[in-house]
Length: 109
Image (cartoon, rainbow, N blue to C red; front, side):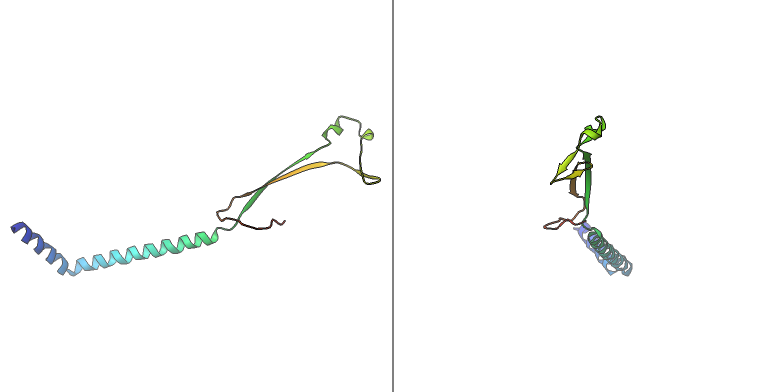
């Protein structure tokens, strides 16, 4: 019982000490300030994360074999008398590399 009284007296002395309350106040204000700073900094980072698309293109000539053959003998015609100089196969892969979801957006050049 004597230990309990000493313990309660120590707590009462600590609570009456103004230095203790100053330290508690500084700790609370510091914690609140850090929380506000983290909140606004993470909000700004989220706003800075724009939609980002990356793409890769692959281009290959379909008529690569023309290099080995005399080109005067091979030609591609379309329509009535329109001749193509070369024919290419182009593929494009588009990937969302940003952190925002992109929904129903048209892809424009």
